[in-house]
Length: 177
Image (cartoon, rainbow, N blue to C red; front, side, top):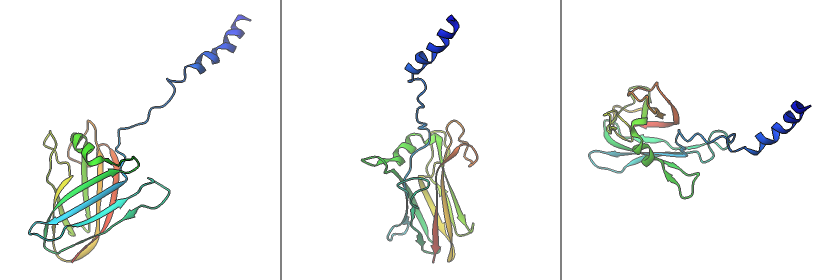
């Protein structure tokens, strides 16, 4: 009988201590709603930019994705700007990524491969590339896409795409003319 009484009362004790059962949010990956890639011609001229914006995240409303139109046979300096616009005021995620540069790597994939060449020009404390700053070189006129992926690689960054997981991935339609 005593055992039955203990079994009946046990759930009351565990239900009162719910604090340990509440999951804590996983804040490892960056929240990114907006990515803007701005390219400035090295020899002078107007900057070109394309913006990806997805204020409600995966699912829901489709993201708004701009496009890039670049001059043939031209070198550009590139800058990525990332925001979390779910917060008010918006959070400059680029600054957070720079603070944790040894955990982040931007990967650039033009399709077709000869559409343009992207070189990351910034480095983290371990001398590994980051990709917030780039140099882009176009060749002949062509049409394709530029996919930009931010890899979150805490403790595993080695300069390759493989370790970690994806914080954001954006494909900009790209024209070189």
